[in-house]
Length: 424
Image (cartoon, rainbow, N blue to C red; front, side, top):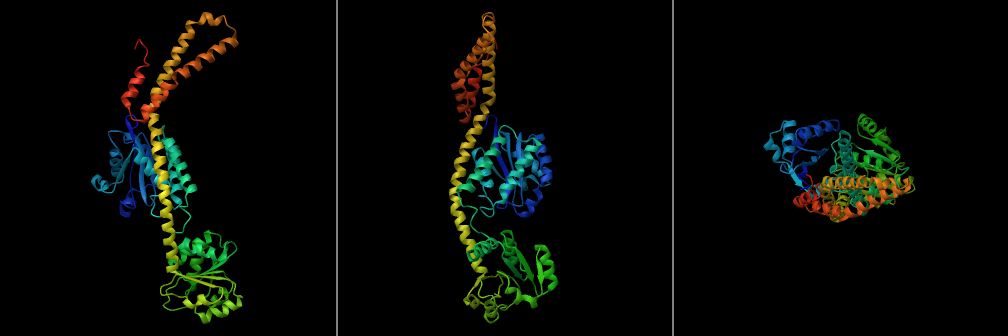
């Protein structure tokens, strides 16, 4: 506990709730402020941040210690028309250092569906911004959110958790880089309209491919798809010509036979003077004959090749995640201890205020003597008494923070009472 309050994380995610439940609780960015105010007005929280994405809805909050976050669940159920007992089946709760650790894991993408994906940190920043703008951050949540962003950055900086390919699209990019190095000023051709082909094409464009052309058995579909990518559509009878010009060809059609055979590709590669051609065959059955790979300059990869790269990337990310978990665990313990020490702030303020009152009273008693001093000498005495007070209180204030960090509320109370004026 932090005084008579507790830090909690209450929510659900892709592991605990189906999409039918997640979509009921989903909160658009423009509604976050209303719900943050509603949670506070309902007495469920005193400070809070709401993170709502396609894979999770979570409330990070400071709540009355005896409540433990139950008020948050009741609020969510009532606001979204879900029976409380039904929502409880999917909800998880973390308190204290576990809540801090969970927030750090989420922001560092250790709790994501795809470990290491970068989007979640931006979503956490947006959640932080919304809470700050509505005024739902206080003396505990504000430093916690700053520390969260710092820890997530440290994980990204000190591990390679986000650098390995874990999807077909990014695996295609990595393989293309192995062939060409940089993808800048490269041209690509998408043959067909399969979803995996679109994924690789989109990823290649995102990583610097300069131009994309689209060919499809139905030209109208090629036109429609090319508009989606900002690309150009070509007729199928132009296919061989464009295969002679592009650097990358992505084949993703429903054809049940080889469209690009060795006999067809050999003259194309000769005309290219065997300049490298990166061929990604995502079709099942395969549309690029395996022996095309034997032609000089032709590099053929199929869906299994890309999947193998993605799996290897996932294993590497999992290894890096072990390092990241250690960072998060260490930082969470430190952070919660420092947050706990903040419960001493009211006592520290009271002790400091009473000491200041006593200092001023003593100076007032010595007013006649002080008036005999020059203005410069009076300033020296003023500074000296302030310094003496700070030195006298140093160990006391350090003890207050130590008591608060260890959760010794009774010891903290007694320490504060020891500085009550004698006439109280």
